[in-house]
Structure formats: C-alpha cells, structure tokens
Amino acid sequence: MAVPPADIFKDGLAQLVATDRDWVPKGESQSLYLRPFVYASEARFGVKVSEQYRFIIFTGPVPALYTHPIRVKVETEYIRAARGGTGFAKCGGNYGGAFYPTQKARAEGYDQVLWTRGETAPTIEESGMMNIMFVIKDKLVTPPLSDSILDGVTRDSLLQLAGELGYVTEERPVTLQELKTAFEKGWITEAFGAGTAAVVAPIRTIGMQGVDYSLPVYHSHCLQNRIKQKLENIRIGKEADNHQWNYIID
Image (tube, rainbow, N blue to C red; front, side, top):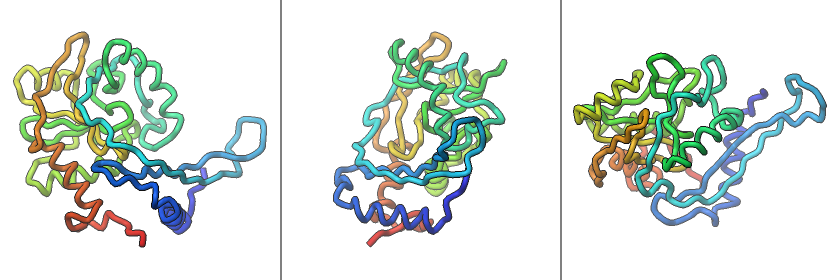
C-alpha cells in the first residue's frame, strides 16, 4: 500500500481542521475526531495488489466517551489478530473478526472484550479496540508491543506521563493466571483501556472463565485519571507541551 507523503498528510490535516474549526466541541473531554485512511481504489476485478490508492481524511465531533467504568469479558476462544498478521497496524480488516465475540460478550452483560493470545497459558493483548493497562502493586503494567498489538500513540503518551509522575512502568506479558492472582491478593487497583477517542476507558469488572472480578471504586487521584487529565491539559494549553506533541493551527 502506498504511503502518503508526510507534507500532504500533515497539510491535509491542518487544512481540514481549519475548515471544520466551528465543529470543534468546547466541553471537557470532547474533541474533533480525525481519521486519516487509505484504501485501494483501482477499478479492476480480481485479487492483486492495487496500483492505485486514495487518501482521505474525515472529521467528526465526539462527546466524552466511557464516562462510567465498564465491564469486560476475557476472551480465550477467539482472537483479535493473528501473529504474523496486521494486528500492529490500524487496519480495517482487524475489526471484522472482533464483532461476533463482542456481540456474544454483550449478550452476557459485558460492554467489551478483553482479548488474549490463543495459547495454553493465555496472555492479555488488548481491550476491545484499545490498548490495555493495569495498575498492579503500584506499577503501571501493559503488554509489550508485538505484531498483534497496536502501537498506539495514546499508549505511548500515557506511559510517558505516568513515568513523569513517578510511577514505575512495565511493558511485559500479563498472563491470565497473573491477573487472577492479582485480584485474589488485592494487588490490582486499576484497569483501563487507552485509545485515541476516549483517551482512558476505566474498567470496573473483569469476567474471567465464569467469575467476575471487581476493581475498587475509582477517584480523581487514581493514576488513570491523573494521566488522562495531564494529557488533556497539555492538549488544551493548560500545561506546557514539553514533548512537542501538539501541532497548533492558527
């Protein structure tokens, strides 16, 4: 697939946001969502690598998402993305196979699925369409990047901010057994998804193999709320953008 030149990518985003500036929501945690994407547009019938692609950017105002903690079910039968595939990228094909197990989980009273890698000793991969993070023994823990885990920019930003707040961060495998033990020992205090639109999606219940495990009630001083607020403050100019994450459009 062709890669759009960096200047076209950046200038296209800037021009579209400038055009749609009146659609930017003003409420807290609301945003103008940006979605650049590329698809094969060659007018040909057959199975082959396309010789023509179209680059498009669209925007849409979105409200504050996941304002209340959600219930997730650990999925051990179905997987989100296979090893050696496209799970590391924001590929549209990654989503098709996720709909059915997610529908099944919702029929059981859950909001989303906590994906695992299909193996004898399952390890946690992602939460729905977001990266997953846990606070275990006062450390921020998240699965390491691989070819089946999305390399999310929000994930990277939250890890950076947590470290600056003095928290130890660990990017390492998290097995299902470790998660069970952490609940039984009282070591786990937070679990949340990390993604572009919601930034943070707090989790209140994790269902594992027929048993529901509950997280403590969250408060404003929880790590997830602190790093989310810090990132929001950087975005809107309340705190210094020391990492040059923002791109200002006049």
